[in-house]
Length: 100
Image (cartoon, rainbow, N blue to C red; front, side, top):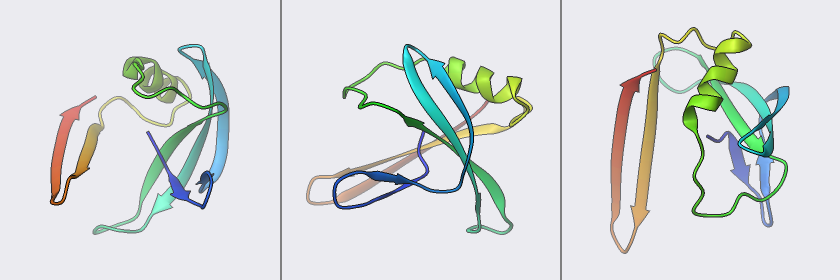
């Protein structure tokens, strides 16, 4: 989950910090911003870890979704989307969506 912009040395958060929570043993800040791309504005939520998370990492997505539902940020009727971009000379895109 992200909502950031790459600076020279580290990621920079965008939006307003809503909450701090520990999930999976890692402390995260939750940010929200209004996304203005697409047919109408919508809320973009992003979790930022306080420390470096090893890569690859195994994270329980349900913990994040339950946190968002508990704080009223989502109802549980939304759709989850992910996009993977691979660069190996040629860019590929894979977009997946699923109900929460």
